[in-house]
Image (cartoon, rainbow, N blue to C red; front, side):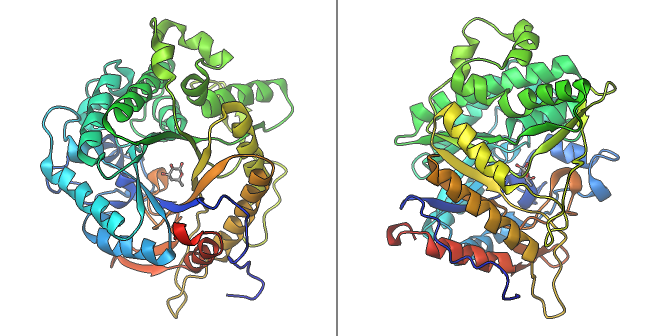
Length: 453
Ligand code: FCB
């Protein structure tokens, strides 16, 4: 590593109980897709759909975390994280999404939770990271209003089984990504492009979130509940009126369709109008339930343009003023991260946990077997500096989780984009800590109280 590389040993001046962690999700790492009674999810289906995923990649084996989790927990311990955010595969514990419980699936999460706790790491369980049981999709999935009840029943099962050991729960990961990409844009499962279906999915997912919060609160003593929102500023690609209108609508869909009703009790204006036919009496009160923290996933801003051929008339545009960062080769906007943290703090008035931040790449080992991911260190260094600025300016930030512990199945990009602090050789399943894992270990060491380590 060159001497000009940023050191992790910098002081950020955060709270003494600040939580440092790593994030993963079930379908992206577990593999064992047909083992021990797991049912199929909509992502298994998408991976088998022509053109659904780059290179025809699937999550069938992924990082084989289902079998190799003890090694992965040891790697986390070695980095020194205090917390691990992972998700439960709904079809692994309820193969058809409801009804018969798969004990072998529950046993897996028992072993994992116990192993994580034994390593001195706090488990943060996310109930939904995009892998809806296929059997529920066949009943209409999130476009069926009953889905809120299906989710609540699944949440009860999780709360009863794990609530004695797991106290931190997130209901959903990135509501707007899986609904917009899955029901309007066809970048994600289930690959539908239809306005009404999309609007219903938004509303029912919001209802499911509210029901999930209530169930967790009722069943888990001392629980701390949040939801994980992707948020990034949306800029028009050009100054044209059409691009500005496209950006305004995408901004509501991306940044506000879920946070606003869940925390403020109403839909943002443009969506509220479209949503009217689907809202029943009492729904907004069911959606807006007290939460303990706001989970923020942030990577970088979005550029939007008008495109009349799309479901909503907006599309992803180009970043025309982009200046590539010398180490990364593409433009990054760390200031946008600081601004987003401050905006959320002001608007939603909840403690914030950064539940995902990180940087992809095509990291490959040197002939000596090291992985010198200088670009990732540069990215994380700049972004954690901006988190420090936001905290100093008054944002109540309680934790930061790097996406991700391991290289993994990156949805539509398959295995073509690596986000891990740990490199995974998918042929051999060999794990190798990248330089960034060492950098993160230093950062955690310099910014944890002894109590917290
Ligand atoms: C987020 C997802 C996560 C991963 C990262 C790179 O949108 O929550 O699963 O794909 O992006």
